[in-house]
Image (tube, rainbow, N blue to C red; front, side, top):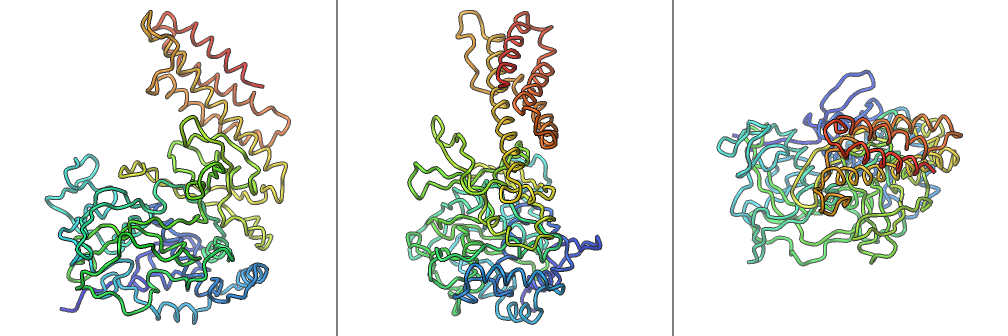
Length: 532
C-alpha cells in the first residue's frame, strides 16, 4: 500500500466563505489563489482560525513580496505604496508566485521526513504516545471524566485529517504548560512543556471586504528593529532535515533562533512538538505524540495583541498581553484599538496592589492609516479569544466582530475616540464600585452579629454575581447611546444602570432578610454619589 499522504496545500482542509455566500473547503494554495473571491475564513474553532490567519499572512507576505527579506532596501514609505498597489489588483495574488512558493516546500501532513509543522524524531525520542483524545481540544483524556463528550481513552475515535490540522495548530499557539510526554534528547529526559505563545490571549485582526484585503491589511510592517538573521517559517527551514530515526534533537537549554518578521514572528514561536499518526489511507489521525519543542521563551510582541506596558518592570516583563475573558464584552476594548500610542493611562491589577500601565495598540493596526480611504472606511475588527489559565485549564473560546470602527480612530476623529475612552472608563469604574457596594451589603446582611460585619467576603456573593450579569448588558446599550449624545454625562448614565441592576438583583432579598432593605439603600446611595 502507498504511504499515507495528505498535502495540506491541495487537500480541502481550510473552510472559507465566498462572497456569493457559498462555503467550501480549500487547501493553503487555493486559499491564496482565490483570496480575492473569499469573504472570510469559516473555521468553527476560533483559536484555530487565529492560527490559520497568522500562517496565511506569512504566506501572503512571501508571495506578494511584502516580507522584509524580499527587498531589504525597501523603506516604510515604499512598503506602504507597494501594499496599496497590490490592493488595486482585482485579480488578487499573482498565480505564478503562489504556485512557485507552494511548489518549493513540503506540505504533507504525514511526510516521512518532513511532516508539516511536526517533528518526525518524536517516534524515537518519546516512549509513549499522547493519544488522539489529547490532540483534540474538548475531548476528555486520561482519568478525566466524560461530561459533555462521548469519547474515552478506552475507545479513542479517529479524527479527520483536516480537523487534526486545526487542533495541531491550536497546540502550537495555545498549548498548555506542565506535564507532557517525556522526550529524551542526548541522554536527557524531560517531560515538562511551556505555554504556547498565544495562551490565554485575545487576538485582534483587521477584517477587509475580502480575504485578500484582510491578509494585506493585517500584514505587520517592516522594521529595522528585527535581527538581520534570515527569516524563515518552520516549513522553510533548509534541508537536510534531521534524521527521523535519530535521537538527536533540540538542546533544551540552547537559545532558539532570534525572532524575525514576518515568518518566525507569526509561525515560528511554538514551544510544543507534535507528530500525528495517520490511518492507512491518510484520511484520519488515529494517535499522536505531543511534547515539548523548546524550554526557552521566544520573546516577541505579537502584532495582533493589545499589550499592557508596565514601565516600572524589567524589560522582559514590561509588555503583557491583555488576557482573554469570556465574560468581558468586546466594546470594553474599543478604546485600546482606537487610541494611538500611550494616550490611555490605566490602573492595572497584575501585581499585588496593582501597578500602573499604559495600553499599546496592536502593532498591525499602526499602518492602517496608509490604506486606501474606501478600505479604511469599511474595515471591521475580528476578535478571537481563548479563555484559559496559564497552565492547563481551558475554559471556553469565542469570537466577535466589530462594526466599521476605523473612522473613529484618534487620527481621524479625535473627539469620538476620546468619547469612547471616556465612556469605557466610566463604565469600568462604576462597574467596580457596583461590585464593592454589593459585596459590602451582602456581608452586612449575612454576617453573624459580632463578626466583622461589613467586611467584603472572599468569594463572589450572589448579589454581586446577579448585579454584574444585569449591569453589563445595560451598560453596553448605554455606551452606544452615549456615542450619539456627547452632552449626556457618562458617569451618571452608568450609575443609573448600576442602581437598576442592584435593585433588581436584590429585590427578593428584601422580603427574606430584615436587614437587607437598609443595607441595599445604603449601597444605592453610594452608587448615586459616585455619579460625578
